[in-house]
Image 1 (cartoon, rainbow, N blue to C red):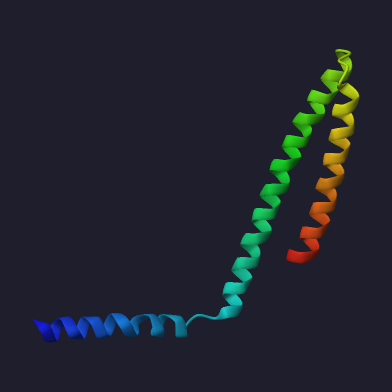
Image 2 (image 1 turned 60 degrees about the vertical axis):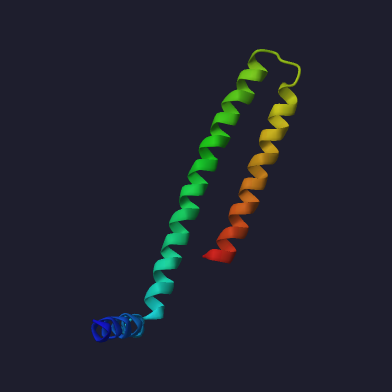
Length: 95
């Protein structure tokens, strides 16, 4: 029984080195890059939706004559500018 256990333990210790020797690291880098690009696109879309909802809210505030409507519009413009600057920086770094 001990011999079988030792044999299985040795086989399990050697298996990862065999598996990892077959991996091409350029393929892994390509897949990671594609996953990062997909994640960035999803984040861009989510932030775009949030900004669109914020614009609708700001327009509603202006239409209803609320006192803080100007602050909402200015805040929305600042958010859009930060979003654009952030996307440019991320695209320069990742892509």
